[in-house]
Image (cartoon, rainbow, N blue to C red; front, side, top):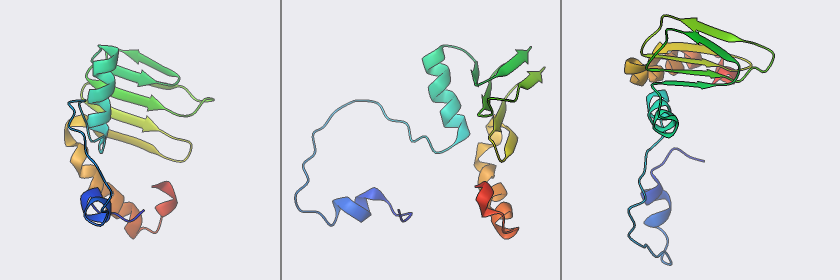
Length: 116
């Protein structure tokens, strides 16, 4: 899909669309901080983990492990996002989540788009 706003891409060009007003709540899950916010509200916890994870004295963090054969352990951390996928590892301060765009740009400059 092209990176174009949905209102321009579809809504402005279609003549057979109807809208029903509703208050259903919405979060644009476009950053790891927002993922943390959504999951921490659902879990009711300041520490959100997925996958095989061990924590000690960790809070206000998202630890996301997609590797079934690997353990991710963290200790004494606060305000972190740790995302371990089969081909890449991301560790960043949750409060600096918008800087991921610069990291993505550096990865593209290196020609390593397969990691994105």
